[in-house]
Length: 280
Image 1 (cartoon, rainbow, N blue to C red):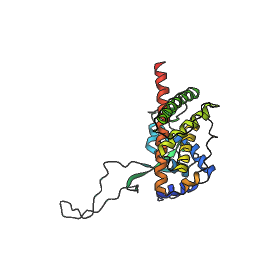
Image 2 (tube, rainbow, N blue to C red):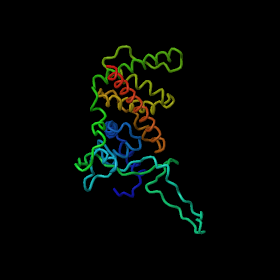
Image 3 (cartoon, rainbow, N blue to C red):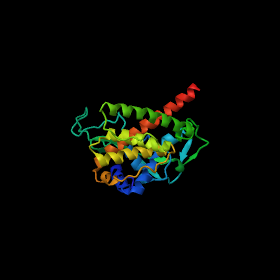
Image 4 (cartoon, rainbow, N blue to C red):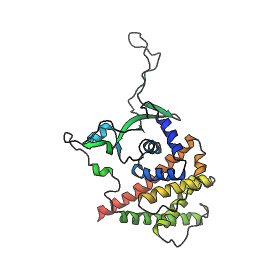
């Protein structure tokens, strides 16, 4: 694809590419490695290279002692524009009385008045270690789950969901939440986590959007369950068509909210894990 293609066009095509249920699930599984990335960037990375695992810019890879190989697979994403980028407006004059022309900012795009900078990144598969570059950062820290005991993480997920469940029941008893049914006896951890997560995140979306809320909550449940290596078969996505019917602006808004909630949950669990390690 041409480097001149805007990221907005790539996002449009990416959203079309995940309208099918199987493709949508494939996208959710893919985004596990990029849960800290904005939803727009998750779409962009998936569309351009669904095999990508870790992406960085050319300069960022140098900090890890790696160089980009020849003819790499370029992946364009968004980053916040530099604050010191100043535009010169047509009509202004310099000290000699000459009119100044507007200077274009390279790679700047706007989505609903949000100013974004398009940058080129490369997957780790398109890089190689360099003996000439001094290794500054530990590349192992880029792989999110490598340094964690999965069983301990799952135990913290269970404890977290237990606390959430008690909070839900308390809110229901005070008529602050709808009386959603939460089974008392769960067959396994996977089912328990699914029930709690879908219940609480349907509330965060709003019950007046029943089908959209269901798909929203199931997407979050899937991402969290999959990240912690739990069973995702409870997520059916029967209302994906309701999401597909939305305009791009609304899809991106919902996707960004979903990504933020998932990141908050995962980071909380990891902080608890790290806290237990520090206390041990």
